[in-house]
Length: 395
Image (tube, rainbow, N blue to C red):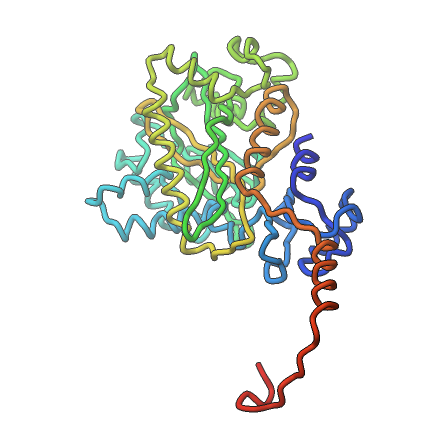
């Protein structure tokens, strides 16, 4: 599996490793006792916290402290707004900080959202233009993933009457202007899952994987009001589309894809389909790179520098029919499950490349101990000087 491959590639964890202890994970590791010191820890959950202050210089961990500044929808929005104000509307790069659809965090920004909602209803558009008479927003729980809790709303009353309402201080909601004109393939909506390896935020050093996934809705897209609650039409999450994939209710181009990916295609396969629609992929890719860099740039000063950390993020972006790239969210610890042949074709290779880029230093504690012991045994011990200028307690 991808998990096993990543662990074998660089996550040898020892229960007697001494410095750099990572707690309970050592006892659970199948490699415990077979290595004297680990040099890479790849944890599959951000809840697993390595003691960054105790790590040694050659040890690497796949999570940055405060990475939530990038992966929390509300925090990323705050950083984008800050840079919009800093750079102004006349800057050559100002447009890069407008890559999020108009976004509000509820309940904190409830009054501001209500005002924007009513303005949009009367034609005063936000960042995303919608057809006349349509005022559609998508609501997402801040801490949820895989499409859980997502809903479309057409009125403030509909949101207030729905479960969770305008959110609570403990369970915030993000509400975004819905992109009603997505780029499509043969009438089906899709978004992109991109993989970005960050090896440093200060200075910024990041690697964008050239392969990834196009995630498709399995029902033809329409803005018919009767279909606005059809999750198989408006959401592209694989977990949402799974039931239709299992019943074979997918478009022909997904059925014919090789290797099969359920409701997903590789970026390479998507490129071929878009070129048939006269879409210039090279132009799109340049825009994607700019947007990814903008997201990393705005959080750069909010994520502390840590030489022991690296992280592989999952960027979800959507392209509209004008070729504009919109960031939907950034995921920490994106899924590396190998459910389909397409997953097994792409994900293990990507993990191998990530480990090769991070390139953790090999280390054998037992060998170091032997060298130190030999040097200590052969070197006469010098007399310890008495207290002089620096006499006293040292802090």
